[in-house]
Image (tube, rainbow, N blue to C red):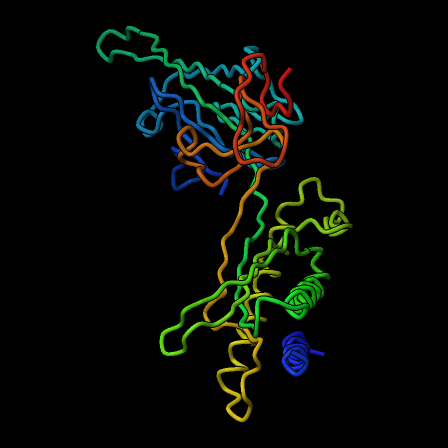
Length: 326
């Protein structure tokens, strides 16, 4: 039975009985250095970094004689090519399968020669480019929702029965998505409606969460599952929106029936997305304006022990992605 039909029957019954993101990307997908200014680069966890170029864009457009490149990683040791680090002979760096500990300052020392045509005099020019690379992941989405239903009275058992039936219907709607309804609540209020006087209404609130029991089974052994859980929660949101839209349609277009005393209040459906970050990650729009919606790895001196959206201060932390203050 369609969910909206089931709820309609219950209402009548109750009445009857009562982006890898960065700051200097070019059209080629490369990121160039900027003399004297560290370039911030954001790499999604378990993805490859963009290509970092050991020169600025203007220099790259010119001829370069005898260029040399030396990349130094966050551990202040020279980088060399391996199964995770790729450095080309033209100084381009890519980091594969990026992880939290790989975050930090990457520095490239670049040198080249200028040669005077008249005298063939050579001069070595040196330049340093700094790249601050941060691991990030997408936030986990959940949705806070609110709806209103009319009721005969703020007293009696039928309000609680409607509340429980509605929660069960919504849970069944999204069960196959490994989502569920959490923190449901309701209150009854008197509402003064123009031309209708005082009306009793139930103000119902609940959260749609993507981590129902067994949710990890939807990940298909994926290391990071937020893409899957976020896709599922978006589907859950759409189903619930459609459910309440159908409620409004029923009562607005079925002119042969008198509205039951308990029915959905048209245009009362409200929804707000709630973001959370995994432990070791947090949001900081001021520090990471180019990745303001991202959950960025907590920097040294900060940590995040839970699914909050901010990293907390802890001066003893010396690593990226700390989950505790030690």
